Image 1: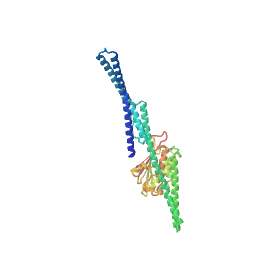
Image 2: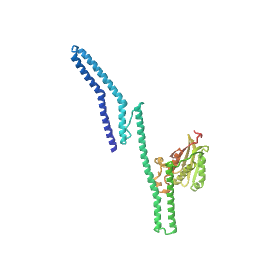
Image 3: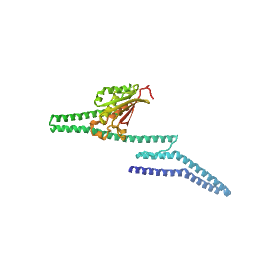
Image 4: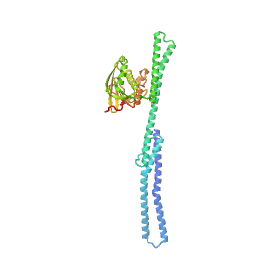
Length: 375
């Protein structure tokens, strides 16, 4: 509120200053020529009256009328020139001055509405572009700072949770609370499980950091896309059966896309892992579809889980973004799975999105290989 008041006062002060400048310009463009002409008329009349007393009053009157007409025409021309100059130069320059002063104080909403094909119009176009880019840059920086805070908060939380558990179980063993072999083994197993969580989190953090800073570069190759998917799931079929995950397909087997097989299989693994971790049923049904969409291969992964609240859908690909319930236990996920997926898709020059469709549906678009059929 205080900043808005300061901006308003600054704008008013600038406007008043520019108004004073315009009044001075009016005096220069109109009043000065008129005053000079009147002085010239007076001096001329005095001269003729002193040197030629025989001329009649009519002659002096005609002379005065001609001089007044010249003065009027001069004033009109000066006023027209001033208006033309004001509209084409002064007002745009004043707008640029006010907009620049406003930007200096953090206000990017002052409008420069001058449009023309001359150099001044081009300068105003450039200024508007700079104004928009600067506003976007500051908004992106603010978003990046917010994301960084969330990221650091998530890292601290997820490291602290298993570390606190390890310290607690270790202290219990040191105090001799585990008096039986079974109790000691229970504590040791819990310590080992928490250590695994820490190791996995650190590994995923390292991978996410490398992906987000482009230190891992995908190497897409023209591959039968459906074969990449089927071969990975076939390798993990025993694991999926043990976890009661049933996968069905609706895929175009002739589709050739630009895919890094290893990295894309990491995507499928993360998606299946999320389905298992966040499901609300004993058995999970997963449907994978693959079809051509323009110049892209559209890969859709749909499960029958609880889905995601609508307001949270735009954020699920952000690092450490999870529901509050999942945050209470690190073993439920690091919050990096879909963030890693998003980075791999981006490295493939693809696109990603998510919707609720009787469960969570994740949609990925990967460029087709050159020469593939498109629709």
